[in-house]
Length: 296
Image 1 (tube, rainbow, N blue to C red):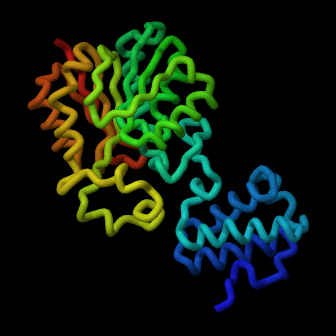
Image 2: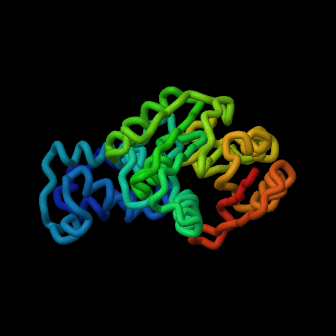
Image 3: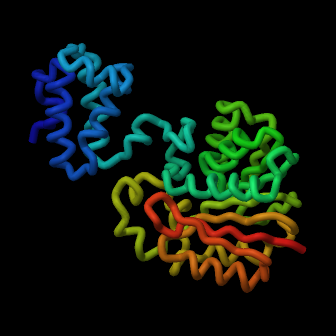
């Protein structure tokens, strides 16, 4: 069957391209096909979204049409827009991503909001804080916090050297490379504390549930960043016995699955006997992160 994204040479204007590509992506089952088409086409043409919509009769060159068709073909195969473009916006900043790292989700911004709220409550805004990001991936957590907290320094760890390269590049990109160190480590096998804040977005999908994830996640996110074992809690169990040594007087903040907050809170309470534990919701109202105050 002819490829509907490249077979037609009638896609000569922005208007007709948007209409055609949207129909094709919709037929492929892509959620929000129209929005994805506009974003990909704007990037291909080097236009802002507003300029794209303001120029419906602007003609596409043959090269632009070919590149746009290639990007739309990738999206029709359910490759995420962020992976096609090679970056994802997170907390107002653009982060490079690669096949080695998890594609940052808006839900994970809940950890940043929680951390900054805690810093304000503790009166730590001007303190020389030490931060640890376990399983840093793209570095979006540690880099964002260092951008927001100019007196802080941080360490990001990951088991993947390829992920650490991406994280380092993002730190340099956002001007915090001199305040960040990236180390290859599994969970908390390297303890270089004490820290004031420890954050992690660990793999927490139950192994049996991975096959049911959307293809954007199941196919394109590294399984290492998804698979949390039989019940999704393996990494939390491995982390909790070692948190106190790295974080004797501070806050541990972790992302959890929509139905895991209670179980993770119980694990942390049993291991740490914390003076304070909190559960925070994301913008959709789902329990998204657990924060624990540690004190020796």
